[in-house]
Length: 214
Image (tube, rainbow, N blue to C red; front, side, top):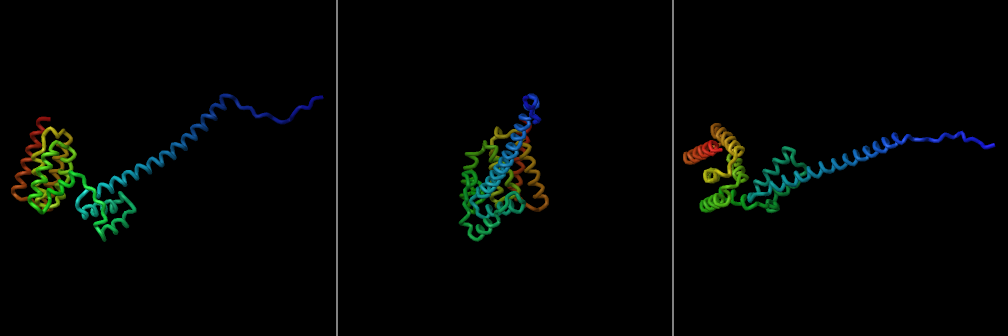
């Protein structure tokens, strides 16, 4: 007589099996995505950190680079750079300055030597009067001029920019920056001579003319 087995055989419904396989796949995908997302975020943070530090040394002035790095450290935008700041403060020749050509010209516009200031301003007007990015840089620098002469040359450049370089957004940006700049002047934070005031008024009128044509 044949013996019957008391053991039960586990059977899985085909539909249930498909669902289980899909769930396992989704679970694995989720883990992979989480790991990938973590490393992507970490990579983007490292890219941002590197770009901020590189921005700091885009100058011909070591002290400007140090001030920028201190700002990054104080605001927490970049961490673990205090040792670097301390080392570079002791010996500014260690700072790997890497100014681009425009930054060299911009710094030249504030140079103590009059001929250097004039030639730098003329060069920027000749090469970058149509460049919205440079226009923005010069506008931002109005509130933090490197020297009174530098401020004057910045405004001279702005008056010589080409109207075709402007769109509505850039005109608004320029007007906002000038409004902030004039607020600092009214509060006595910045001082303007008569010639600089006149040149600034000319640029404001120039912006209004551009705005009417857009």
